[in-house]
Amino acid sequence: MIPEHYLLCILGMGLATFLPRWLPLMWLSGREISPLFVRWLRFVPASILSALVVPSILLDPAGDLSLIRPEFLVALPTLAFAWWTRSLGGTVVVGMVLFSCVGKLM
Image 1 (cartoon, rainbow, N blue to C red):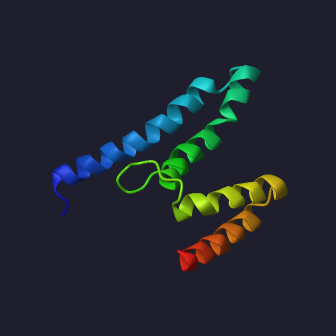
Image 2 (tube, rainbow, N blue to C red):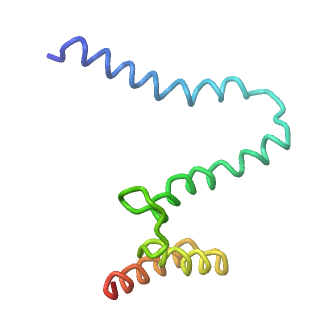
């Protein structure tokens, strides 16, 4: 059988996962949301993605800024391609091909 502390831990994790999703939903349901707030919310996904990706592109394993890393060299043309075409699939393919090429050259 499962020890009690495992069951309490699983229930606590479930509650910690459920509440941050449920509380805003209940708080905002039936309310008029300001257009300024909706506009602000549109920037949240890009901000989170940038916060996750940019440090791994610019910083070496020691945490120092390095502009000659393969990740950074590939990110620039891939970003330009993404901006120009607005194609997610194409951007992924271009990034993978460029990273493979840079990896073979370095």
